[in-house]
Length: 171
Image (cartoon, rainbow, N blue to C red):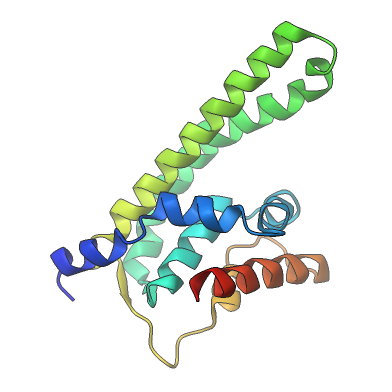
């Protein structure tokens, strides 16, 4: 598939739209946040891999190498904003100005995540970053497991929720 065809395929639906729809499915947000908080997963990367699977694509080794810059963005921009937002949660319950600040941080965090998804889609639209899924490729669950820092039974349940909802959303 040449890059023009690939771009056309990947824009239906675009990653942002797909990620929002999947994230809103029952249990997906909780599963993603559990994997983020307990296993070091990047929610945007999990959703990206589901989106690629939706298009019957898998990332290549070149894509894995290119993820470094995107992961740096998450570590340097998104995660500090998330940390501040979470840190302010107790004070925001009692202090309106802190609640307003926390709301702005929540918006900034969402914009940072949207930028991450934009970068992931742009990466995917290069013909060397993705390829058609083959019968001998590992399952989506195994691909997602590789995104985890640790793997435990609680993460297995969260992964099952994510992949089940992806499959249901995919159909």
